[in-house]
Length: 152
Image 1 (cartoon, rainbow, N blue to C red):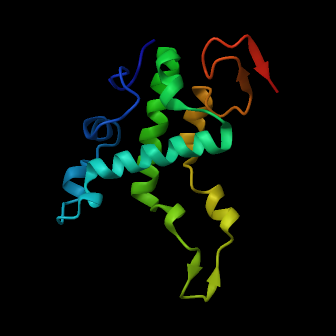
Image 2: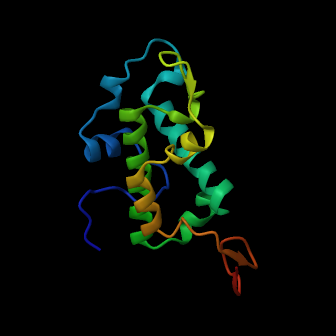
Image 3: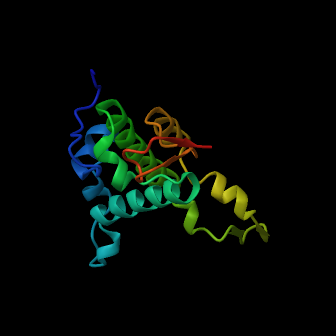
């Protein structure tokens, strides 16, 4: 498989170098440390990965932690692109999952369902579809492994 970006596939995590190569943005420069460890670039990446994986587990019964090792290189590549796209989305738009939805300027509250709907980047969703993670079909047998079939 020919890939546009040279992203290592041996681990399910992305690095600051992967993000810089993909987006052209150096998070270490953009997110200058102010002494708060939760505001570092590494923490931003880890938090985004954790939240996207929690989303997949909660809504699609998927476990990237368990399934990654059995993915094809095509799936791994697109999974990593999904992580990179989600990080770019949050970097550019902000983390709407942390938003109460209250707009003080207009005195209105945004519907929580709308905030949930826009919490995942459209480009990340496309990449997750490409790697097969946006499926609610559950395999029976061992979890994500040698099951004999699918439950619908």
